[in-house]
Length: 439
Image (cartoon, rainbow, N blue to C red; front, side):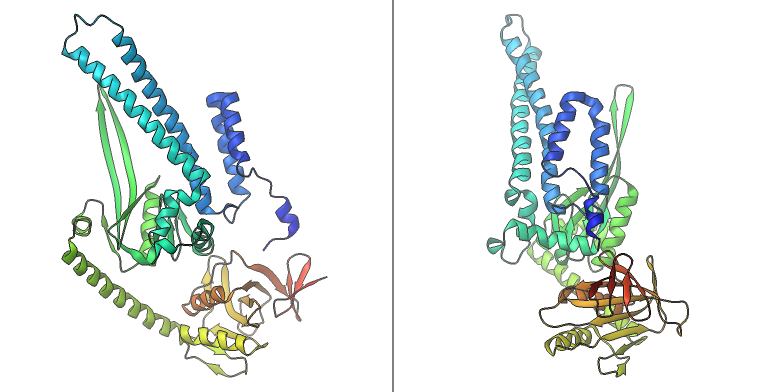
């Protein structure tokens, strides 16, 4: 959470002015505009640390304007082929052999294919950027919903993916992996993933005395429709990181290499074979869920839950927490409940010893306070973090803490405990209920 003063300092070029500036730079500076464009893109990204203002999906569709560059190149190739064709037809062809006619036919094919390529690249690029509801990205989301024909407007479609990536996303180049959705060249629903296959291949191209080496890095995601989404990555580190993240998010999926036997077994499976593959996936999923349930039970038994009435218990499940939160909100409970682990939890953000939850009323946000470990169990916490969350967000945070993990502090506010209240590191004071008061 940021103050208004901090938000005012963030100045960057918004759509479509950034595109207008890029075009003007290219017109004025030609190839020398590239470093300036890259600098502006870096600055815009730096000024939006929580993601683009318009959302990840809309930014991705607007980025398809780059296809106009490929359309221009295709048009140049088409013009070159057409020029050669017209020039050749004006010549005297009485002494031509079959190679001359072959060159003529080739130039005609180049002209036609280049023109068709320019039309396709230009049309799809403009369609995705200017009409995102018709984009391939939006269509990929609709196709994975239970009832595609009844899909909500594109703003809500994109918001589902953007919210998941903002709260839970891990990024590997242009590939974003959340808890429910994956944003690559298309969008994939994580619950529908059945196989993940990596491609790390080096190709050699020989031209005369020169040898060109190209490294292909791709991740192939196969879903329950036998549809494959392919996303290109830039480095082996990105590929490895994406695979490790997906193994945590969809452990029951089949992992392997591109063009492996496992991949072909999935891709070429007929109806009976696909049914067998699906049954094997469901068995693996049930096994992983049971292992996770047992792990959560062991973690929960190492924590103490203090209820609003002061009673304590160490027998905690995620379902119990959800019911407790809902019941407290329905009853208008003003007192908090809290979870304290036997050993403080550690994360990259620090070490934390207590999570306090104030349920609030049915129309109010849930208040959460996360206390940093003071260094001794007998010394009260001095520093902490607070946030207001929706019911769904609060349930996710409680579930994460129950699993022995510290929730992401991206949307939390750092506070200091003064003895009577939590004071934000700024101009505001936050009481233990999470309410803010001006100094």
